[in-house]
Image (tube, rainbow, N blue to C red):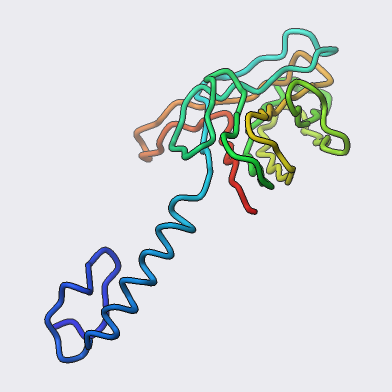
Length: 189
């Protein structure tokens, strides 16, 4: 007999002298609060499995988000737009993998946000990559959005030798596919 609840088990169905009816009612209430306030939170989790290349170093490119892990009231167009259904304060957390193919010189890259197609002030971040290297950039930004607003992540590089880098799965050792970008947009209030 289990004396402690195990995640994934419905403890309210257990017939036990260790869990009285009032405690079962409290656990039911707690589970409903969690489901309503955490599991039903507005979010979108997106990624892309392509290497995104720099064609011209003087251009700013929207970061493509071609696939969806999961979402609730945050939608992706498969190109890079993340559109919210409900207004609120949202936090964007992103991981972007860059590669510098220049074997001699370090290069830099900028990341920034666009809200409804316009650059967001103070959202830019600059990263420098050593020659012939891969760099994993973490990006975080909170922003207030109205219903129907969309965010895009964008990037610009100092050289055409810079790309957002995706890597195929390998079998020895067993490593899954590495996306070029993963982005999570979550409503925080």
